[in-house]
Length: 178
Figure 1 (cartoon, helix red, strand yellow):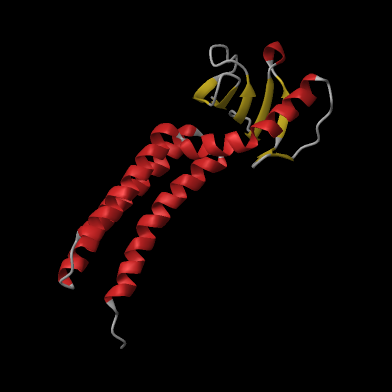
Figure 2 (spheres, rainbow, N blue to C red; figure 1 turned 180 degrees about the vertical axis):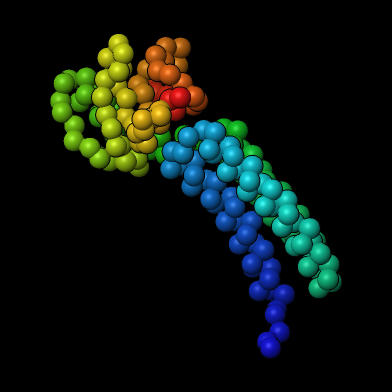
């Protein structure tokens, strides 16, 4: 049986923390519904909280400082909290995709038929249309029980059956219908 080197277990713990933060970032950037992002972040936060004492004990067992374990835990938990609270990965992918979303909404308002699925920036749009008051909607996740995606309207006037809403700017909102 081979001897496990401290470096190998350190890498495994670091990957666990990094993968937790990375998964939450991906889930948000991909456009998963707001409550889903929060629940995933909470679950991954619990995983990090469970992982932390084992990493600290490992570092102490190998007679090394526990500071790296604390640093990885704190950084991962901060990342998870900021993703759940502000949805910054979604906001970044939205900013990178805004010109394409604006173009698609303009085409809908002009009466052009848009075939779906279509790509708008970093998002795949599966359903498009004009809602009440001619408001363009671009659903990333259409569904009979409620759709999720982008609507081009003021945050003060969102005439959809809302489950959740993320205000992206004065013209675009990311919503999930109930």
